Length: 367
Image (cartoon, rainbow, N blue to C red; front, side):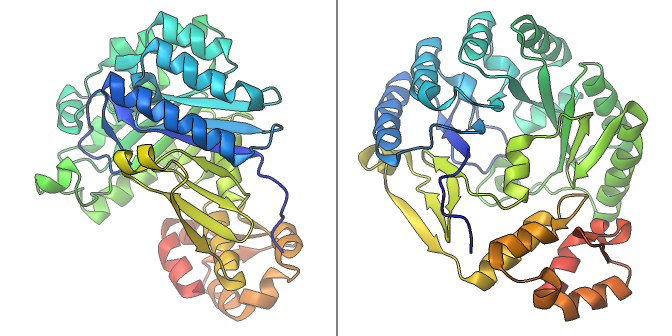
């Protein structure tokens, strides 16, 4: 049975952006001061109602763009979370270089934020313009310097590949420029064109599957040369700087989802908040509850855990469901093991190197 104690991980979604990126499908809206104030009022009501665990291990402020808020609004938001952050190990804020100044950086550090996730995306001005991004490399260096000056040195950068018109040389240069910022964590995501995004409306497409696979292989080969180890399909870390918060998702831990556009998992339920700002302002507790059957929960744990290089913990699976993983998936898993796509040892069930490259196919076969 899934644990019933309160989650130790919290995700809070800030829906505002100063500009909208061409690829973004997250719940977002263009920043307006009065709307942000109304959102903060609704957010306070939700937080007061939720009875959040005061002994959280991680908080993650995502978006949208948390730094799109004014300094005063950011302070109000962070003060709401102060009662839950006294024991935090990892407190992350997503940051857009265009909306961070010295005062905001100092405020983040003052309230205990010790990790920043920055949208680097690419080096090339043409690709950044295509994506609707307005920063450049000097602005990135300035942003990182601001954070370092405030004591926030756990820096993660997001990069994208398979962008329309992007070349292997572009990707290689972007990686080198990102490394020049001395991050301790890198997330590299292939472009997915989602409906209703600006990319979709312009009828743009990601690169061919073959080129995308070549780019991924290049990333896997390049980053270890600089000391980064891959611990999840899209994530690479120096030393012990793996994301504690994101590993909670992949290890199928319970987590709070706060604010519109946020999802959460508590016990045998997932839930999704409304993506509509007017609806959230009217009723910040409105959400869709999704009960999970034992079979669904088992497969979700497998689906998330196989994203990790080390794989799914057999002990965690047994402790959660009181069944051995091979008793549940044995026939299908053994077939995939025989095909060289899965590997099993006493501690983990994991994808092989070849299976990792076609993980979606492996998961379909397990279903």
